[in-house]
View (cartoon, rainbow, N blue to C red):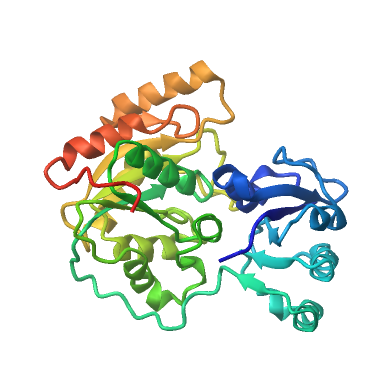
Length: 345
């Protein structure tokens, strides 16, 4: 387990998506977050106290979490002295980047000298096996997206929370670095060798026979030229019974790849259902989750209503509206299989 409370490192971020790791931890584990540390030029804030390493250590911080994320998943040069200062001040360091903390000689040597712990949550298990596609007991919901960074993790966590509030057995299954930092468990599928992705997801969501649900965090998009491979392997390993499509309205193109348009919702949903049928021929869609944070309240409600009419599915913004309509549909479609078991297992 990563020792808390946390100090979240945001670097010099000017794009909210660049600190989605830190934002996710602050949103879903606020009780563990002591403050944030930002470099000059940063315009993004998580509305946590701005602290120096020294002040954070004096206030009891235990771990510096590298909360920034970038396309290459590398530790920025500006972060290295901050990490070294944290180690010297008595903090452990955790990171969700692809680059391992110990790959930086100065960080590795300082951690060894000071007896500090370096945690790389994007380090997959060493004993993964290839996926088999053999049906296994249990019920599984998977979030999929029109693009990357459209709210699949938030939607998954919100659905789990809504199900648990009803006394249903439900467990969020993390497949990305932020989700793993939030839950303390999971497999980072984008760091898994391609042949083992579906097997990794089978491991994340093992057989269960309690009538409960695994709510599996989706990654990437089948339509993204950079990440479609990860998405496809995840879909096959999840063997989902239900899909929720996640989307952020207003994007001019797929994130990071101008010239590649965002797919329309109906086409994207059908392609994901088609892919999922390889390992679960009975998969169905149960809802659409929109990220309407850039829209006004009424415009967001109007858009959700139009999407619901278009696709014949409940559509909500999980942050602004909750997920009760989506869970209503899920429960009604799987009434005979879903158990009102204790949610606090």
